[in-house]
Amino acid sequence: MSSDLTGRVALVTGVSRAIGIGATIAERLHGMGATVFATGWAPHDVEMPWGAGNAASLPSIDLAEHDLAEPGVATALIDEVVARHGRLDIVVAVHARSSEGGLPEVTEAELDRCWAANVRSIVMLAQRFAQVHEPPPVERPPIGRMVWFTSGQALSPMDGELAYAVSKGALHQMTGSVAHALVPARIVANCINPGPVDTGYAPPDVIEAVERRFPDGRWGQPDDVANLVAFLVSDAGAWIRGQVIDSEGGFNRH
Image (cartoon, rainbow, N blue to C red; front, side, top):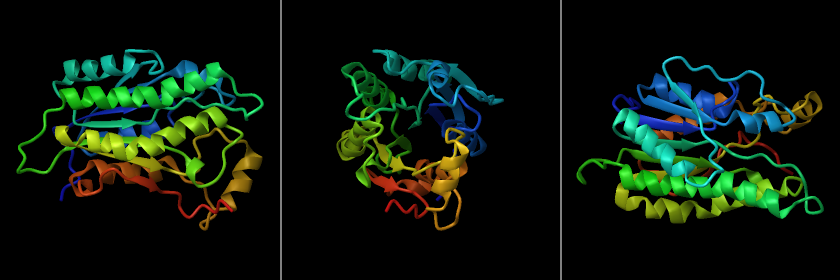
């Protein structure tokens, strides 16, 4: 089984900050030989307390901006990649809308925004990907791959980020159904829960408190996530399908 992705085209969303998971995955897939189209949405970062600083700069990788919360953008994005590169083999959907606030603070508008950005967009990416993907002959292993991300809301409460947690819960629960729906297009799909990953959003006191809950005394890093994604999208990962994979480095939630 080969980890060589030469000749394959990959779309990676959620690429806007150099220290983020999306940028790291985009660079990793490019290093494996894939032609990578990367996209992010910087205005979302500006809204967040950790700000937009340290924007991604990825030489040799197409880097665009798309607001995937807007209707029609996910479908148009798939078409844009195919128009530019002639095909699409891998979709890694890293993008997500972050949202603070518990039950007393949550609003209908924020629930709708999280649903649109975090769930609807990924379903529509999957739909259009299935429509445009060119599967290999049935006697060959499938090379189509799709990966999306949930959080740890199924393992412990996240009621301080209710709109976000609800949308991530939907991504967790839809995995088996969407992965099965992608079978006719010979696309293998999985979902990853990467656990706490240090992408620069946490203040020093949170960094210190959380790292004590890892057996190795450190947070997850974007490279840890990229290691798993690289395996799943390679030929070696073809036998893992329709799974929600908790890859948290032994994080102690209790």
